[in-house]
Image 1: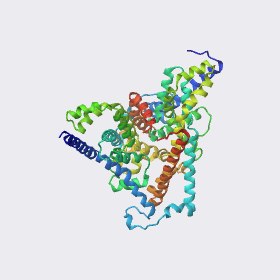
Image 2: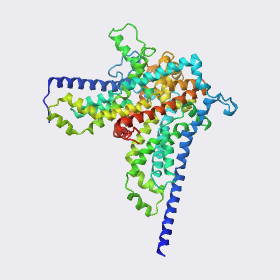
Image 3: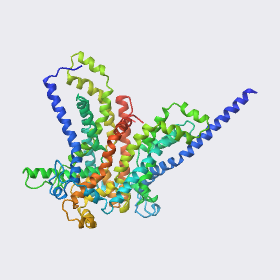
Length: 299
Length: 316
């Protein structure tokens, strides 16, 4: 049913479309701007001449980036922690979620509350820091992934989902003599894949973007993540100059169009850190959206 | 003869269940231990607040000082000023967020008024992207746009002769609260609207049809059907934000913190970090953090109680 357009309505439409158009541009233009600056002629970039479209396109920056001291190591740390942290998040949400959905679990009610209660309190930055220190997690790679063992919220999501599965599906396997572990891996896990996908996507983005744990718990360069390395480059112009000095490739290269400058390095590293997110976003968008819907449902 | 046999069988069955229950418990034990270590053990660290704790010493070798570190902000004028300033920053940022927490709802309502489905989807998809970008990247984006040397905005203004010298957008103590709030909106407005967009679809379409028959126009339908339909969602989120009044996180503020804007950007969490880990005042920082945690818990339960009172439903 199409209504007749009144003047007020028409004006409202114009304003409405324009507003959303503008806001969308504000949201994505910065990414485009960084992209075109990372692939344009570096001397033009330094002069601030690249505003709307790229000029003198080249990909030298990306090739040189891999030769920058510490950067490949940082990328490796970010990548492995994302993979391992996501795997641990999946297991620590789905396996206890499964076992705690079983009525025969010894002390089920108590242990479930024991886990859920942790969502409502936090000891705070300092006590957590001291605890990690006593556990030997300071300056230890494991500090990035072990805390993923505790994810009460995701556990509740999994448990609720598993409880909605008809028990008959599992009973037939039980009669066949399959143990809990077999039933979990072969029957339950495949059935809860939709929720696992959502948890995995959020865990992966969280791991990739994680920043404060590097600030708080590490001081060794070899443990720095991509996010933290970018932060250092942004904070300290001197750090950048140092990078360029210790990079013989950059010093030997005299072509100003492709010579690394602090500005071009900044744009390039920013792009390298954003790209994985931008790449996965279109494919996983439905899971991202599902995530917030699930989050809205009470635990 | 049949009767006892049955009982026997039942008993056997229940022991099998019991063994199964123990097995399940043992298989889950590693996760329970992890929960204990990562969430409960740190609570013992609250005891630092009652001692003159120095890093590297055993707690028992240090002096028990009772509530000294909880009371010191009341007697020491420097710390008192600190606390007042940090609380002011925390509350201002939280209240700015709460006061504008209606924006995602308005965003969703107006987006719903756009008739082209493709346009709507495109806006929704693209405005959500910044939510998935880390704060460091937001910082980089802001830097690229507003930096004094090579920021886009300064470049454009200079090029068109609107300014003579570049403006130091970032190296200033002015407008810190507003700019930090604006970065947050840029990052999360589209994302926060999704919840309302989904709530929109659950409003009964018959209501709109009935209103149309009664001669309601477009704006009155928005005002009298859409808005009331979304208010419960708004209310729940508002209550949750009351529970988080003191927890505005520290990542964003840590990243944007400079010597220049520290006065206005240092929120409670950041203060605890600066005092405890940078300044090595572990006992004092723990006392502040502990007080914050307890007040937050009280706020959360108060908000929940209030929600039950008003809506007859708890928020968690």
